[in-house]
Length: 571
Picture 1 (cartoon, rainbow, N blue to C red):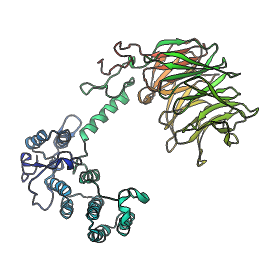
Picture 2 (cartoon, rainbow, N blue to C red; picture 1 turned 180 degrees about the vertical axis):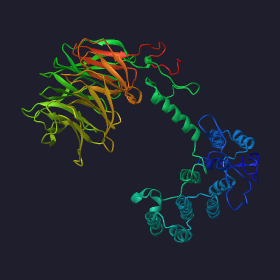
Picture 3 (cartoon, rainbow, N blue to C red; picture 1 turned 45 degrees about the vertical axis):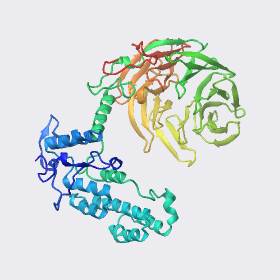
Picture 4 (cartoon, rainbow, N blue to C red; picture 1 turned 180 degrees about the horizontal axis):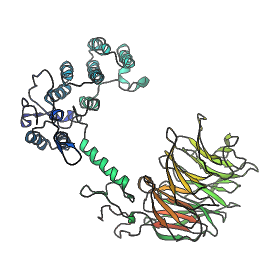
């Protein structure tokens, strides 16, 4: 049951050249091809012995370990495991087939392919096509045009698959100049590839019991780590901090829950705040008619960089440019101002006659800005203030958020319970409809999700990539009269945080929907929260109590200025 008795022991196998080893895991091939007419079944096809409590097949387990050893370069150890266990990494015919591919013995490899015993004829035909295409290209490389044409007519075409590709290959015969151009007319390949890469293509095509996927054991380990991280309610650490020696566990000390700084520079309610994309700055706006740019220090605390003065009415929102060198501020039913972050200088003012602005955002390339207006339309300006486009009709509400995705989709609240997703180029419109009035929304960092704050004290997480669908709901925060905003945050944006009218900040685990933390400290409604995108252990909140609180970890590692601690209890 352990393996084919007519195989040579692994210790007698020779290694293929190192140049051609990138496409196979072990590189151990028999000196003499087997003479059998059909592939002998591997032990994995006939041995049902299992290990562990989950029914893991011993043969599969050993073969995966063998593959891991070979992929790590431990060829002698891998060969010894094959010999001691009696479980071959590959069947003898597969081993011969691999060597034939590496040697360019195309006719022999096709013969071996049919002996492997793959039941799905479609897979066999596709493999034949891949091999023969490589043969075709290598003949062209050797200037053997007539032999290449013969291969195309007598071997590739009769397979009767991928006819479009056959015509593309024909064009290379008719127009030799095309052979030196990669990717012309959408061709995926116009020349031969290294044979090791050809083996990788075949490996992906074959059933895994024939050729084990490369680095399969590492994939399984990474999947296990991902699952542990996803189910850990408090996982908020950088990649590489987990250990294989213990099951993964994080404590509450990984969540920013302690006030490390209170900012009192605003003289009235603080309505909005947002970290820059690089995490080096924090911007806040207030009903005191001003905005402030704060500089983030290495320890997460901030210091005042510029106070932005010029608005005549409360500043309702701020928006960072794509490269964080400029910022927009929007006055409540007033104007939009564009500021230089480095100098604090106002670079331009954007207004539409007597019509006031209510929201603002940047285009993905930073060459234009958009603003919602009090007449419920949306306008686009270039940076010099020239009107580029105007989206008439009801495209927004008098109080509304406005954001734009990296691929040019405009997102706005256009009805009391509906969010419009408008493709600027194609003018395609999609809509998210809620049963309750929408208070605000925020876009995830990867532009795939939208977090919607509702009047009924719920947060709804929507997927907007492809088919729009509701993913999750979060409950517990308080809201009855004011605009309250939430945010994504933490490592890989695994958490949801929200302000609340009861003066607290609420944090949920994004995947499970479970509330994991309630942060107390403010004495007025918390209007907005923002999580630092470059430091998962730092968060900020803005309140009607005229303060901004910076939240950090409860237990700071004194040896690390970035306040980063390790998981699994190690430091």
